[in-house]
Amino acid sequence: MFTPRREHARFCRPRCRVAWNREHTGDPQAGARALEWSITAMREAIERLARDQVPDHVQGFALISEAVWLVTLVDATLVRYHRQAYKSAMKSQASARRESIDGTFAGLRFVRNQMGYHLDPADFLQPEEGHRGPGQDGVTSWRWRSLPEPDLGSLPHRGRAWEMTRYRAYQAQLAGHTMGETFGQAAAFLKLASADPAAA
Image (cartoon, rainbow, N blue to C red; front, side, top):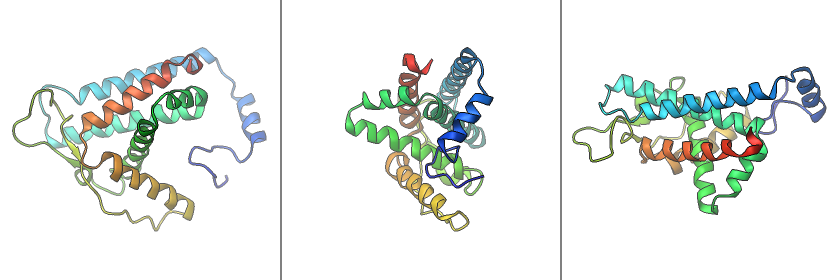
């Protein structure tokens, strides 16, 4: 056990990482297939958000929660195991777009860590009531609510700093925006990052 210096750190030093990788070397094709499966599952979850019939609030919360989980899972997998492809895809974006994409994923990590554990889904989500316009199907027109600062007193200092960064990203990139905007941007970037030959 160790205190990570970075959010995605899994090892205390490079020697430990090399030793673990030697012990757990698997079939690279199996890893590529697992990533492909995860991306397919993510894409299907996002498509379910746009069903023609708006589900009730409980079903909508469940659909959004599943999409958050799968998007952050694919993002973390690419960051950890296909870092060069991820960085290459990010560098291909304009500066403002990079900031928006990075903030969107940080905000979704905040949702993943808080929704259902510390906050109720209804605290995060504003269902769209009444008439929907063209292209606003399912829960894609629901919006993220603005939230007060979370109570992070139970986390260690480093954990509080990370979660506050995510909270600020949530407020900047998600709050007030629709599910369609958020998940559309996230899915488009992850598709680009996973299409890089280095990700295979």
